[in-house]
Amino acid sequence: MNKLFKCISKSEIDEIPIWFMRQAGRYLPEFRKIRQQNPDFIKLCLNPNLVKTITLQPIKRFKLDATIIFSDILMIPYGLGQNVRFEKGIGPKLEKLNLENTLKTSKENFEKKLTPVYEGLKKVKEETKGTSLIGFVGAPWTLLVYMLNEKSPKKDFTPDKILSDEIKVKRLMDKIIDATFIHINKQVSAGANVIQIFDSWAELIPDNKFDKYCLEPTKKIVDYVKSLKVPVICFPKGIGVNYEKFCLTIKPDCISIDYNIDPNWIIKKSNGIAIQGGMDPKILLEDNKKIEYAVKKYLKTFSGYPYIFNLGHGVLPATKPEKIEFVIKTIRQDR
Image (tube, rainbow, N blue to C red; front, side, top):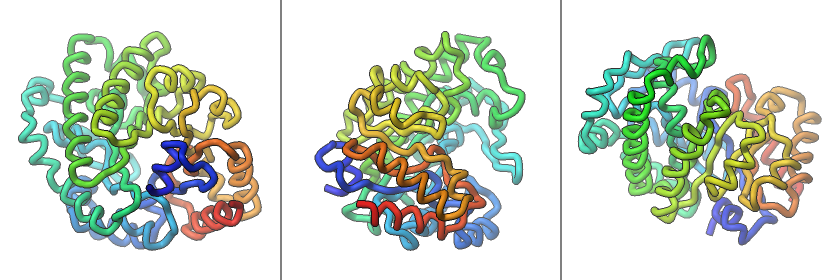
């Protein structure tokens, strides 16, 4: 049993597992080189050989305890027939949703479009036997936001913009959940032995609709992952005090926290569930003294508790690779 599994199962809490969200990404010069040669991001995610190469780049550089497949949460909208492209400096752009066409997408066609993703996973699995290989999906709410808003909701977004037609939302949400089941199953069959659910825009859900759009659909996904006998990590970013309700209701194997969450508070409110993450990615842009202080503060707070070291969001592009190395060294020396 590897470190991540031991931590999640609470059988071993002295050794802290380490991995980073976006550990394969723009902060690595070897990734940037590949990205320059492959400007179409979706095509890159559908190239099994490059998926393998990129996924393994941080594993070759650092002594990490988990590998996360290089992919994107928007592979599900793509699989459902909605064209997705990434514009430099802007982010994802999705074509206007044709709901009827989306609802007609068959399981066979969905799987066929995403077959390269699963082939990439298989290739990575061959190189990472005996370690944690994380597959992932976007939570239904976050995918719903992207599919109806047609872009990132960072600017000029209000929930009313997409929630006014409740029948349309319900039909699309049900289709997203079904597609998510398929995508998870195929990832697990290809070799993923942990699943993480990213609810990147959970903070945008109105309080009076939190149960309907966060808890209820996410519970269905978590229960499905558990039925496959695979550990599940949830990251409902930005939900604040609702982390307590989330842990009590959803009961994931591990809860990933963002950088606005007080570590001492979440220990009391997580219902004994393993905790992951928390440290602000911006700290890695500071000098080593400040980084060491922040890392050791998290280690001290979570001492004696099942904790996976990670950040409160993804590694920032401006991060120097040696800062990741320093964090890992600091944690290993502290144990």
